[in-house]
Amino acid sequence: MRGVTTKDIVYIALFAAIMAALAVVPPIMLATGVPITSQTLGVMLAGAVLGARRGALSMILFLVLVAVGLPLLVGGRGGLGVFAGPTAGFLFSWPIAAYVIGWLTERNWARLNFPLALVIIFVSSVVVMYGIGNAWLSYVSDKLNYWQATLASGPFLPGDLAKAIIAALVAVTVKRSYPIIRANSAQPVRA
Image (cartoon, rainbow, N blue to C red; front, side, top):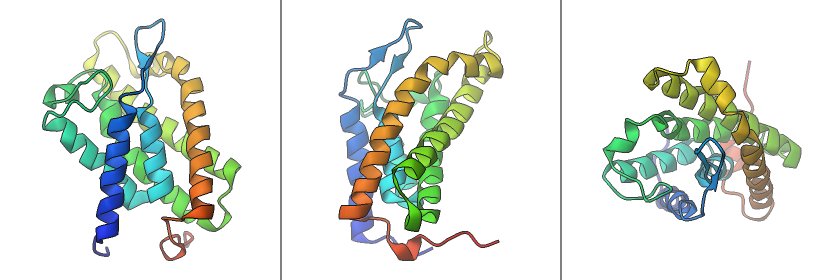
């Protein structure tokens, strides 16, 4: 593992700040009372723009800031208590989702275009974030099993698709104009 450069630190801090800024965007409330927030867009962008390592580290930094009490989540929430609630699994999934999105983006860097970026971002974010988030939700809830929690996530898919479209457009644009992921870090997977 190579060392962390000053530029890496700046990118990691920048994307943690972007996550904080996305908390200010008003959530869209569903009939279930659970909001669709824009912060998952930050997770998608971190992985697709920064790559696996820096993307995951930016999410870890953000979650550390939340854990120490900064009110950086939608609704001004922060502190250790948010990591014990029913939606904590989604928070735990953010670094992993950023890493998976970044890893797949790096592996497909040479041929990355909008459709491929959209598939990578949408499928990775849904599988990782919903997988971990719904598992946690079913664990802490005595009313929902995993299957019920997964079905309850259905109304969030259109919002996540819209965020994945935005993230894919940004990722492909950044790749063309100011690539942060470099060719030397984007090696194909060897069998």
